[in-house]
Image (cartoon, rainbow, N blue to C red; front, side, top):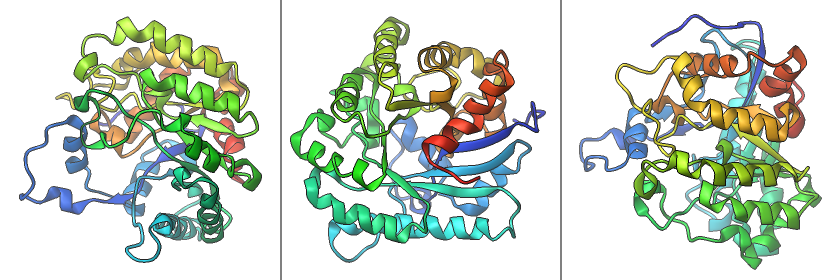
Length: 345
C-alpha cells in the first residue's frame, strides 16, 4: 500500500533501523515459521544500504538515520567478545558511502549503536574501545537487549535470554564502563520487565538510557487479549521512567508482532489513519510523560514492515503528531534524536 506523503518537508532523523543479510532464511529447507517474527524475517531477508536508501527516498524528508545493532556481519574469527566489532566496521562503511554525497544529501547511519556483552564486566572496556576505534567518529553507544518472558511463545526465535539481566552485578560492572567513554545505552525489554530498567537508570544517573519501542507492550502468547488489561501497569512504568532525567524513549515498534495488533501482517495492509488510532494510547502517554524533547519517533525498519511500508509508517506518526507545535514536532521527528545521539546533521 502506498499513500500520499503528509508534510513532506518536515525533517526526519530516523533513530532506529537495522541492516542485515538473512538470505538463508528464504531457503526451502527451513521448517514453516511458528511465530510472526520468524515469518517477518523470511519476508525481509535482505535489508542493506540499497533497500534503506529506497525507503528513505519514498517521499518523506529523511535527513539522516541511526543504525541499531542486530547481529549483522559479526567477524568469524578472533576473540569471541570482539566479533561484534565486525558489525560496526560494516555499518561504518555504509555510512561512508552515504556521506560521499553520491546517493543524495541524506546521511544514513550518521550514528551507530552497536553491541558489546556487558556481562564481561570491566573487561568489556576493551571491546567498547575497539568499537569506537572502527566507528569512524560515528559510534554512539550499545544495545544489550534483555527481553525475556516465561512463555516461549511471546518471543519465539528471540527467546534466548535469562530474566534479570539488567539487575545482575556482572552486567552492571560492564555498564559502568559506558558513561566514562561517552557512550549511551539502548534498552530493549518487554513491558513486564520495565522495573529492571527503572532500577538500572536510578543506579546510573550519569548514563544516557534510551528505552526502545515504548517498552514493548504485549498482546500475544500468555498476554493474548490482555493488552488493555495491562495498559495501566505499562503506563505506571512509563511515568516512573519519565521521572528519571537520564532516560528518553523511542516512540515506535508498535508495528511488531509483540503487541498483537490486528494490523500485523493484515491483508490488505492497514492504512496510516487506522495505525495511528491503534497506536495512539501508547504514543500519547509517552509524549505526555516524557515531553517531546525526550521522545523520538522511530521506524524500526525493516522489522516493522510486518505491518506497513516506510512511507505509511511515517504518515501514521505525522497523524499522531498533528496536534503539536512546530517546535514540538521538530523535537519528535529530528531534534531529540540529534541531541541524544550527538549527530552533526
